[in-house]
Length: 304
Image 1 (cartoon, rainbow, N blue to C red):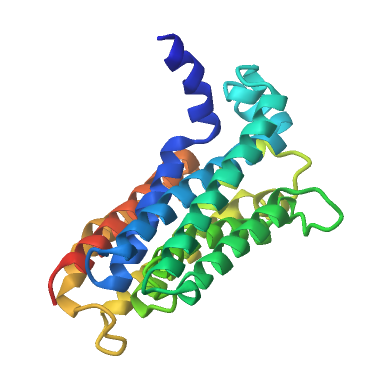
Image 2 (image 1 turned 30 degrees about the vertical axis):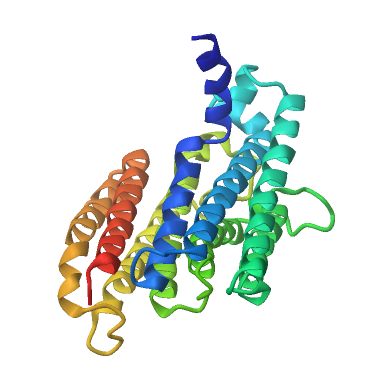
């Protein structure tokens, strides 16, 4: 019981549930690119990429809470930092430690690539993607003069978060040395648009505690922000269905049946936005996105 009480605040700070979804993204990307389960060294490297993403997300989530501690005293006082369950000093150590661990997993992947038939050149795209994510993290969270301070810049901040989430899929494709895979990039676009819309809705939900922050919702108001979120969701729907079209033929046309549950769930979002039920709206967006990604995973495992 004591161990649970010690670990529970850290699990909340790292948002371990959300971070573990990063593992799913990497696995999905690797399966999309491989059109099946990776094997041999690729399987080991994929696992290392999963662990690297998970710990990277631990670090980013903790840093986000650390930077938002004053806002969370209003919006989420039960969070580990504003509640005092974890000290700010301990949080800083946790942020740095998990970032180092994330890089370490990537270095081990480099060693395996270099030692085997893949070669170091097959690992370099993974390093590039990891560095892009690090740059996004710095420019999103940091208040340094060298940073673009995207967190308080409205839509650019939402775009940065959405880009970093979508890159997990490309990171997975890179784990099997195919970072330019068409199937992976098509799903990246879908995930990016889903997350972009959800970030806007989350900002609407947080308007009460976001006074002083220059979010898009605070800048233009609830109605216009909701309208943009709805437009982005329409784009997400189009991006979800387009790969099955006769023109693109990225996925087999009849496999579109697998994304129907996601489409139905997505259609339930607009009424929630119109009713200003933003918490329910963003939960539905998340559920629809999860159903969509699971559908693409299943599709990729079906023999051609």
